[in-house]
Length: 146
Image (cartoon, rainbow, N blue to C red; front, side, top):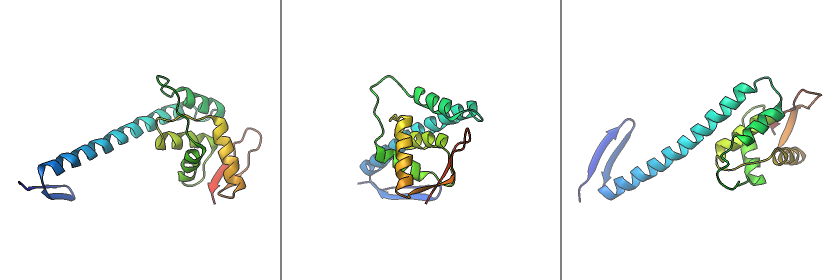
């Protein structure tokens, strides 16, 4: 049994045999694949966001939903997943910020505006969110975690 030693950056890999190193490499490759998918999702959201910077929220969300890969049957995000994505957002946020959070956490899942608004209302009713500013005409509501 050979023992390998490598010091890369802040991590030192010592005392691993070849099979353990191969397993470690597989895990790192899996993590890189996940990060690449997240990076693509964030780039797509940024591209769409730049086109709707001062536009309306409905057009933004519609484009977000239509930008999804339609090759396979849609897998919808569960309400609990949408809730986790909403509660992960830090600071104040608007409705148009929520799709980006959902896409980052669940890049292969799709969702509807109805699912988002239903979850928002449930979170406000259960006092997990509160209004910083309620919707007023064309001015969107601003939310914050309680």
